[in-house]
Length: 306
Image 1 (tube, rainbow, N blue to C red):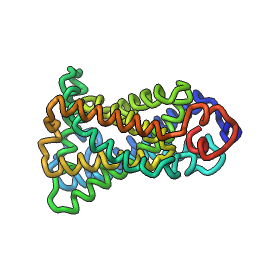
Image 2 (image 1 turned 45 degrees about the vertical axis):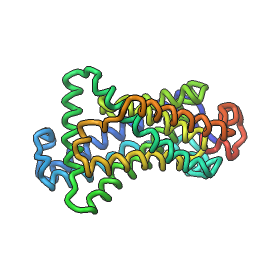
Image 3 (image 1 turned 120 degrees about the vertical axis):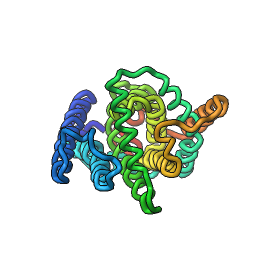
Image 4 (image 1 turned 90 degrees about the vertical axis):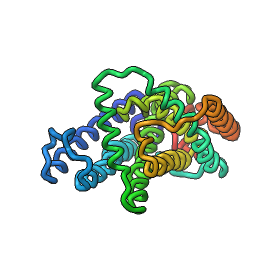
């Protein structure tokens, strides 16, 4: 496989990825300034904007969509172009899953995970955060509440596209297709690499009250991708998770600031169900670390992962 990589060292790949991610973040910051000022607002006074103003909400919906593309999608695409020689789509994981039932299992595991995810979210809310983190969370909650306010049915569709579809595609390519590939190679162990990537996936969202549930979901998504060999499984699962939550909050806005209540036993049963499905998922897979990384041959097992 190394013969098809322009840069084979995982540490060098990580440096390239972090450089691209940092550059993308900087470029997006400039885009915010340009868009905000072009609409007649002061870029340094974003926190004082009136989130009840439809013009403000529309502007930030556009910026939200751009954030997925600029911060997550572009670094992944550029990384593939820099590092790999071959079919870039395959390198990024765009191929069929090993088993057809892996798509259905991915959706099922996300739906069954919801009680456990909400319970983790409630647990996370009891963690004492510094004041500056609380302010960030408060601002994010205010923005999200304004985003998800619906006046007509088409608003729900738009919200699902911006908050569920775009992130599902762009974030999976960034974190699973690229970063997880690198971290598994560095750790020399799929499980460790998936957990580390899940941690970074949550941390780089800079929303700390949702750190634990997001890390858990990142680990689940990483497991789906690794053992299926197809980025489509994690994209579909990511989309389902986000879309369900967007729809719930659209019609029950109070859940922007609180998690739906579930009995602890139901939450734990949810977590056990997820573990059982992922165990079955893993047993079906033929993908192993040695098959992916410890070979120079380019084949259906390693073209999209190594």
